[in-house]
Image 1 (cartoon, rainbow, N blue to C red):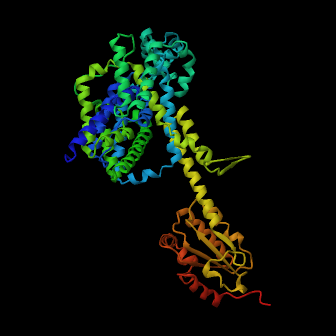
Image 2 (cartoon, helix red, strand yellow):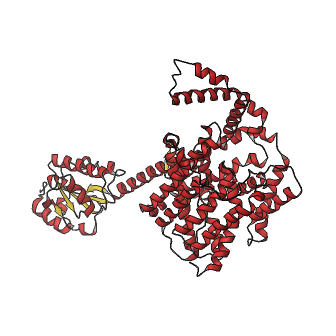
Image 3 (cartoon, rainbow, N blue to C red):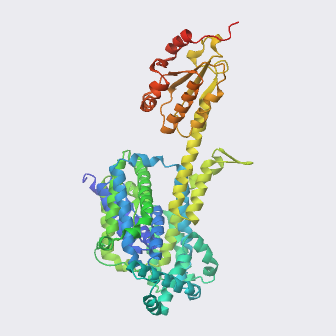
Amino acid sequence: MFKHFKGDLFGGITAGIVALPLALAFGVSSGLGPSAGLYGAIFISFFAALFGGTNTQISGPTAPMTAVSMVVIGGIVAINDGDIGKALPAILTIFLLAGIMQIGLGLMGLGKYIKYIPYPVVSGFMTAIGVIILVTQILPAIGYYPKEDTQYVSRFMADAEEEILENILKEEAGEGILVLEDFEETIKRAEEITPADMQKEAKTLAAKDASGVIGTFKVLPRALKNINWLELALALATIFIIYGFKRITTAVPSTLVALIVVSGIAFGFGLPYRPIEEIPSGLPIPNLEIFTQFKIDSIAPYVFTALTLALLGAIDSLLTSVVADNMTQTKHKPNKELVGQGIGNSVAALFGGIPGAGATIRTVVNINSGGKTKLSGMVAGILLLVILLALGPVASQIPAAVLAGILVTVGVGVMDYKGLKAIPYLPKDIQLGPLKLSSEVIIMLAVMVLSSIWNLVYAVGIGLVFASLMFMKKMGDLTAKRSDVKPLSKEKAWADEKDFPKNLAEEVFIKHVKGPLFFGSTSEFQQLADQIPDTASTVIIRMGRMQYMDQTGLYAMEDVLQDLKNRDVYVLLIEILDQPRYMMERIDIIPDLIPTEHIFEDFKSCMNWVELNVKDKFIA
């Protein structure tokens, strides 16, 4: 590990410097604050490198993982009266669960299957992440915070009172108080509601109403009338430096330059800007409330979200691993990488950090700066810890608008422009009335729109289901197109069928099954019996190119064979491969419907049986 110490040291330091502003920005964006982003970057970077399967990978909070984390955090905070302290144990429990799930994925050897997730789903999701980050940073970039707008908050005062009363009833139900029979306790608690309680709840409702893409657009007209021009100037200056400095040199990360320059000017000139939340000083402390306040009912609705985080982190990390492989001419270990990422995310959750994954830009920076072994990722984590301990109070003075500006550039950069540019050129394979559309474009746009305006988790699930259905349809159509059911006289014969006796062409049908017989292709196969006229006495089914048969295909085969047997039609099977034969023997298709003497290893031996047993009914 220490053979390339100099390169690993410089690569890790450089990657850690690049990670610093992003970690702070992702922490703020998630809703848990800058310290959560920094803690996530420290522990994920160190432990994912130590236990992972990609030597040069640098891990930490990423845009996709942060976007999904926002959903978790926002939902749980909302049901905890807007109190982040009360919600934190449940939030971190879900992050811990996601890390454990990643470890499980790696131990089960599922890392190699992650690559089969359809590209349109990934493309639509990544573009949606960019849209979400970009849109949700508009308000902080112009210095508008809905819960601090008194007039806007006042709209929710009535709803706030109703929400508080509803929470009282829920608490009493949980405590076993017979609310319907005795309202004394309810009335007493209701009378204790203060204007401050209502104001706090109204702020929570206002922030929730203005959250997300739709919420941002809903409140945007009001926000534009209340622009804080200093905050906007700081955000624009940050964006300008990030894009402009890259044109001068890429040796120094432009994001870090923007962070230092704009923050330094704002602080040095004593400008009345809004700083980020204070970063705690000292070593991170484990949050043991994860275990002491664990409630299964508070996290049960988010188990699927935890799985989504685990899968998303796996995809994100393994795609970055492929990039690292291409740059270093090495080969990563996908299952070991998932275990490492899971350990990193689990430890980060214990210390209050947001989840993350392998980060492509930071990994590329590490490799280009000389990083070659796992030590580089560990150095990056240690550097961030040193910065936390030494510069925590200084980092707390960073303007919030600067991090908003950084996130705007992240949102622009994370979108999948490759997928968007390909939209006009993708094959149009779905006919909807007069329109012919591309199924891949539909999937991509559906995931993108639903993720942006509805729910990231559900959108990905819908995209995967739709992509699977489209794949099954295409495979079914392809199998049906390649599988011929025609009289031999009209059939395009295979090479060994050209000498078939012409006088038996009306008595013998040949079925070429080319491809798997599965639930997406059985409907065409089931038409076989209907397509055979009364003149036929024998059907030959050539199965040498049917590599696989699922349970649906098995029962479709049984139905067809039973129908043909009822019509006294002989069925001859040629070259059955191992898996289909195993399936057919399990439910006694062989030998009950097809005796072993009607199964042949090749077409020639089948022809010998035909010549001996099939007679020409139409001899002149």
